[in-house]
Amino acid sequence: MMAYQLVYISSAIGRVDGDAVLAVSRRNNARDGITGLLYADGRRFLQVLEGERAAVERAYQRIAADPRHRALVVLSQRDVAGREFGPWEMAERAPGADGDALLERIDQLLARAAPSVRATFEGFARIRRAA
Image (cartoon, rainbow, N blue to C red; front, side, top):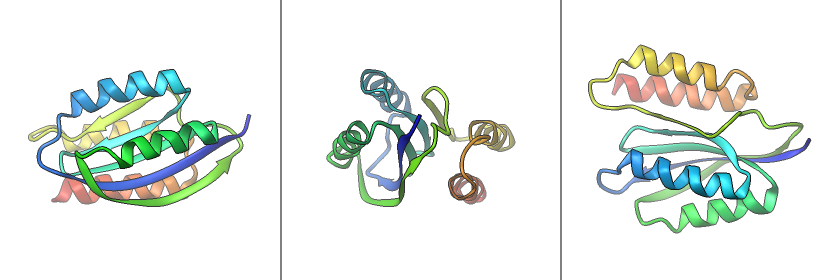
């Protein structure tokens, strides 16, 4: 089943409550049939959204209007033969958290992703870990 996939990055404004973002995202995405992955480290968001094109585009417009972040950049948008991500997930880097465990979790979530999407998330996670 074909799906539309959009990948974007943005910068947080101030400290963002990852749990609050996750709760709202889960509710909205379940309602709209959207899946994907959100990597949030408190300063940046890197997200992939997958689903019906109109639903993904509406979600992105809602996200773009959210005052908790700025400088949104769409990294890719494409049709995919099937969803590359399973149920909605979020990986968040908490201060003092085990960086290796986070990278392992991200690798598991990206197992079916296209090489370019996987490389974007893996590179971002490794750079953020080193920061």
